[in-house]
Image (cartoon, rainbow, N blue to C red; front, side, top):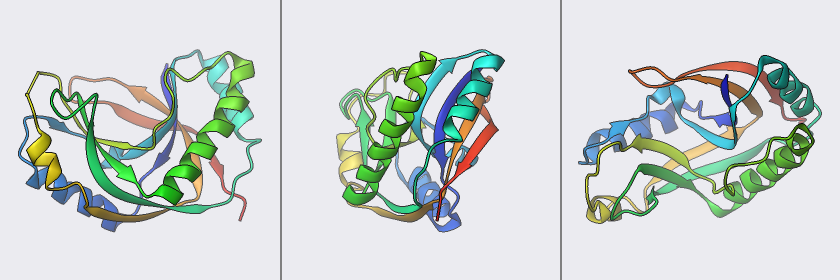
Length: 180
């Protein structure tokens, strides 16, 4: 099964703010469903049910405190001149906390043979772009300083991802809650 470790966006004000951004920006791209807004801390790829259970057990040993991450600014990967993804970034403190959490997860999952496919950069995907659409620098520039709000991070989830023609369907396989 295709899976990943994530932090979900659950704050309704942030979700509404992102939906507004998705509606206002004028690009030919598929918006991510608001139910799927999340930060991927580590993509695990295709793993067996047995390995998924080991991941859940390993992650249950993680100790972290809840923290706040501010969602702000926008950008594109690999770059705004030929984008494949449009993302929302984080404030410095929240981003640093996400990086620390992703490193803890990386260390826990390495003994299971699960290594990250790329280095973690705190971002949340809000558009996926399948066909080449050209330079969207101007569209993104006007939204560069947008503040989408602050999310309290209180849990990490292990998610299963089923790809469908209408987009991915995510389901929870496990959850780890912050210690106070």
